[in-house]
Length: 162
Image (cartoon, rainbow, N blue to C red):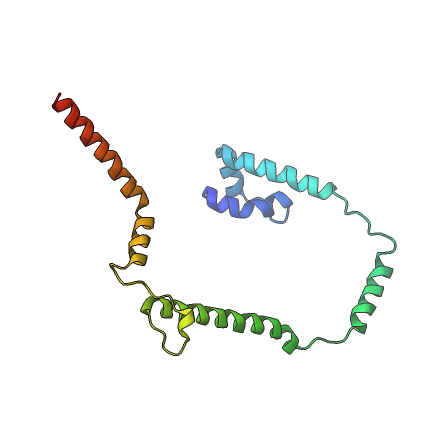
């Protein structure tokens, strides 16, 4: 027998549910890994046999019966009430997603089909003061580095022409 076959039989052999055959015993005596595993499982099963389940509280049955009566007294909830909240959540999610898609579509196209113009962002035309200010704001770091290049050029000219 192989170790894999022994591992499959090991819980039953350790618990005493399956008598150890000669093949199992010969493999376990030859394989130290399987012997160790079988010994550990037998120890675990012995500990489980010694374990005593704790006794329930003396008032457990009384409280259980009272709880069952309370549950039986409550009105029955129909399947429609269970599905109402998820259906509402799903419809609101679809509504929000379609609204976001519609607004995104309006923003990208730059024109409004049936929506009012107040919700549509229109980009300024190139060359206008607004577009120039936006370009300066967006490229502020780049333009500030140009000043450094001018300073380096002036220093090179000064050192080259004494």
